[in-house]
Length: 374
Ligand SMILES: *Cc1c(COP(=O)(O)O)cnc(C)c1O
Image (cartoon, rainbow, N blue to C red; front, top):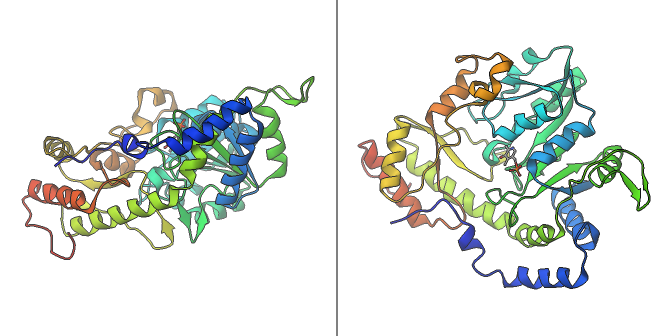
């Protein structure tokens, strides 16, 4: 049996409806901003339950522009977690600010209890990451931010559809960033990103800044950039948005099956999954013993297991000027040593999940999964 990691060829096997929408776009000639973009931005804002949404180049630009919108730059510190994708930290550095890391908790997200200890007089913002689709503890983060007068930018890049007590992630912070990279829950045919905010002033700034600062064809109010999402990607994203919750439900079903099938193994640590969080499993991640050997075993058995990622941010060569050392963030380091990503996307069947569970149990020399679990 084969269990593939990439779901895109399967998902876009029948792109006729999207092609029809694109034909309409092409006929209109509305290739920058315009009605197709506006329609998608409105639709995504309504989906999230937020006032303003702006389409931008990619998730990384969404983070950079979010930080810029809040006036964060040289001399400022931004607190974030050391187990994230490079772009979270790259964005902080790109605006001239200094990233300050804290360790993660047992759900693999920023540990709010450690944030107060990282605050200095230079701290301007907290940047929690909804890592791999797992909502960060926004209630605790917002309370700390409120107590210390800090801004909050959510890195919701991998987490469209994730919720806390029914409320979408990416709607809690001052300005929030989403990615529409092909391997994120809401995705396009290439790169794309979104910014979401309830702040009217910030929204006014974005509208200008992503489009050269133009108030009209002949006048600019501020110096801006070109960071516009392509309308053709907005058309693609609009179709995918119609399916994103159904895909999320299928991923949750698969994750629940994996959790149940692996629960009794001493070598596998399934993170706690409190009910109030809707995790959309952009990645299904557990911590395992003998990780590299397990990954080799699974790949040999046709299961495309992966590692996201084997080296935490504070130990990357790029981070050496920040002055961190091995041992500074033990949970992030353990995560990097033990994390494995198992395929659990919307096209993985329950039979394939059973096969993955069996192969993991065989690797650890465990008996077959209890009947009701597998
Ligand atoms: C994907 C991702 C990004 C970057 O998004 P791009 O669209 O690829 O630029 C940033 N942060 C996190 C946590 C991500 O998963």
